[in-house]
Amino acid sequence: YDPGTNLIYFGTGNPAPWNETMRPGDNKWTMTIFGRDADTGEAKFGYQKTPHDEWDYAGVNVMMLSNQKDKDGKDRKLLTHPDRNGIVYTLDRTDGSLVSANKIDDTVNVFKSVDLKTGQPVRDPEYGTRMDHLAKDVCPSAMGYHNQGHDSYDPKRE
Image 1 (tube, rainbow, N blue to C red):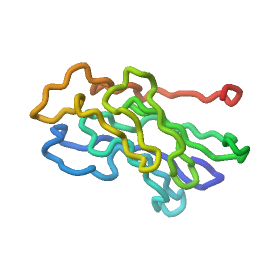
Image 2: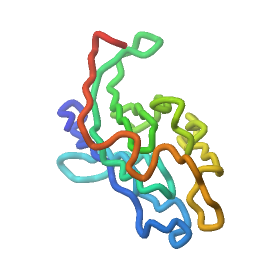
Image 3: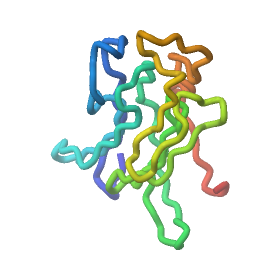
């Protein structure tokens, strides 16, 4: 909860059933970071990290709130979320706009990158779970790259 924006931030889990061919489309609102008005419950924004999650990543990990200066020296209210899909997301927590999305490290191979304009992950089809393909060495595995343990933020280390 951020009293300055009066928003509650949380993540939603993965879609079902696990078999991705049985549920076409993005499976909207799964794998999403929400910012909701604490008084009304109205969703002010929703950012879907893994549309059509086919790996069972369940994006409910911690949301870290910080105030940081951008490259122009302007103070920004940010939300950072290291996701089980192997990407660390940073959003502007006032409106949900994507600031950055970077792989935790180079072993993450299900996504090549995240398009910062669209917010969409760029998938590597070699590591997809479709029924007509045998994927090997998928990273992260179904266990996810980052579990639900808490992280910390040190404002002295940018």
